[in-house]
Length: 34
Image 1 (cartoon, rainbow, N blue to C red):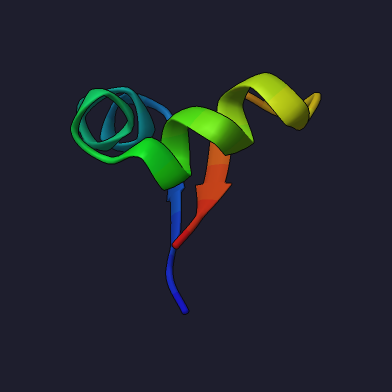
Image 2 (image 1 turned 45 degrees about the vertical axis):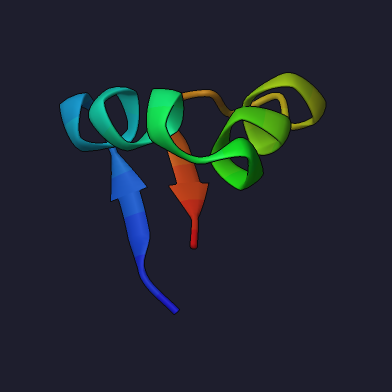
């Protein structure tokens, strides 16, 4: 597993639904695990 934080998350988020879901459900939009 890898963790994306900051700009990396923003760039990866609009590409995968998994990250987008974590963005909405998690209170930490800055960091997402994938």
